[in-house]
Structure formats: structure tokens, C-alpha cells
Length: 208
Image 1 (cartoon, one colour):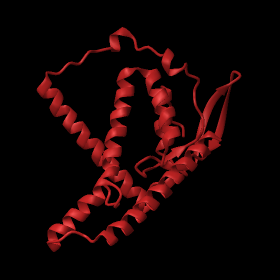
Image 2 (tube, rainbow, N blue to C red):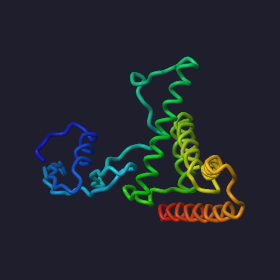
Image 3 (tube, rainbow, N blue to C red):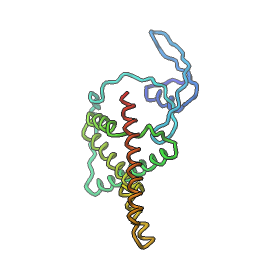
């Protein structure tokens, strides 16, 4: 759009800010300047926020071959108490992020195609392992928090469902009948089964 850019990061920023908006790009190809008219496709990120996507990129070495220059490296160390506080805050932030993602998925702001199963999890775990042990442990922590939040959903077969039964028992003064619990158990298993089938379907779709 007539604005000079100094690097690829700036190009991607301008494209992401213009979903479904016409843009002009002046590029140097074979020694000649060419002007292209493009319109970034509108996509949504994991939190449902729209962004522009053009599908262009730059060639880069594999992540395992990248090494930061010495002047950009730093070692950060915390005492046990500070580390515990920072870990607690980080866990809380990840929990809030997970709950927001679930809520937006239920409301339709995030597509169900973002749901992943064991195949995608294994692939991402492999990629993070290539980046180093810190990235791998961070991904495992994210998965642990996500599974913990999932386990607290009010579905009868999960711990969240049992908490609902305990709450009802505390209000009524007597436990929920076995017949109701069995019906809830069947419903919970069916819901988890549908959820797992959808996750596996998304996994195999990505493999294709």
C-alpha cells in the first residue's frame, strides 16, 4: 500500500491486520519491480480473533538448526519461592486461557476443527522436543493444565460430574439415586465418545 517495509515481521503484521481488505504489494522479481493486488483471507486464531492470511512465506532452516547468537542469550534464575509464585501465576493464566477457549468453542467463535486428539498431540510433542527440553516441558505443562480443566467439566463420568452430585447431595440432604447416576454415567460416556471421535476425525483430516 505504498508503505516501505524493513523486514518480514512487518510484512506479516500488515497482512494480519487486513483480513478481507484489498492490498497492493510492490515486489522485486528478476530485477524488475512488479505491483500485485491481493486480498488476505480472513481466518480466526485460537481465541476466535480474525486475522488476515495470504499464504506466502520465506524460506527458513529447520527449527532444530536455528541457534540464537550469543549476544541474544540470557540465563534467568529464580529462588524457589519466586519460582513457585511465577509457576502459580502461569498455571492460572493457562487455566483461564483454556476455559475461554472452551467457551468460545461452545459459542461457535472457535471452530470444532481446532479440537485435537492423540495423533496431533504426539506430533506437536515431537516438534517441541526438537526445539529443546524447555519447550517440551512447557508443552507437557500446557497439556496437563488443559486435561485438568477438562476433567472438571460437569460431565457425570468426570470428576466435575461427581462434584455436581456432591453439590446436589449437600443441597438436598441425601445422595442422588443410583438410577440417576447410572443414566448420567451413560450420558457422560456418550459425550466423551463423541468428543474423542471428533478429535480423531480432525487428526486424520490434518494427516490428509
